Length: 313
Image 1 (cartoon, one colour):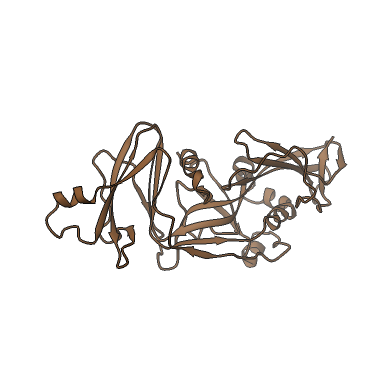
Image 2 (tube, one colour; image 1 turned 120 degrees about the vertical axis):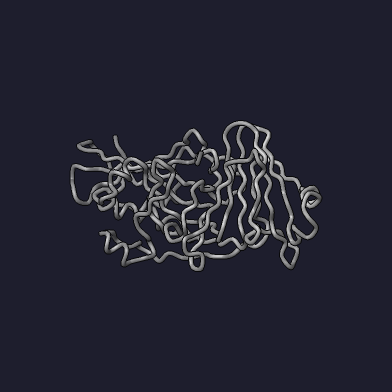
């Protein structure tokens, strides 16, 4: 279901929409971890926390990570996939309720007629947090590849890959509904604030049509300090160990397009601890619109200055 949700909501360009939104305590820009077999985020380390890195045996990033944070009040919620339609049913609902029962509220119906659909509703504002530049994160992986694969999470990284978060969108509360088969319809009650802006009904909550099902609400355990991450983007590395093969030095990365059309860069990195060990890394950007596939390596790649980078013959 997580892959279906991410694919349906990719059109908005906010990154990968997360079917199981983690809290900002677990995921924020600079978070290192992986998604397990249940699509749940499993944190490993935090790159802007030097004490955390040192305690876990990792080196810090070579350069300062530059933050770029903001808040979004307009143009965000609700978000729904192309197969879903939104209709204002406030008058219809008001006609069925006692006078004054729904004062300060508006009601909307979301209906999907195709085999898959998704709806995301959040309270405002949305927190947009990110770190500028991609290269510091790739370099950190190359510098710490031996320690990562020797760590208690080494087998998990080998199985699930390693993700580094660069951008997140988070909120104090969200409601999402995703389905993969059949049609679905449900209604949501939203409050109208003093400025006439619709928002998720925190006080009155929301109401589902009888045939809806699937609505899930998320909020952090500590709402005063934390939020839940609804979208994220960053880098994913797939890592393999190679032993006893002949190598030639070559700083240029190999590039190829995967089946989804996004760019994958493959690089082999010499182990700094074993002469007979090489790590093969596939690096892919996730959560952003896929780049145009490039057959030849660009001279500006951030892999270039890595003296331990090699390609197999």
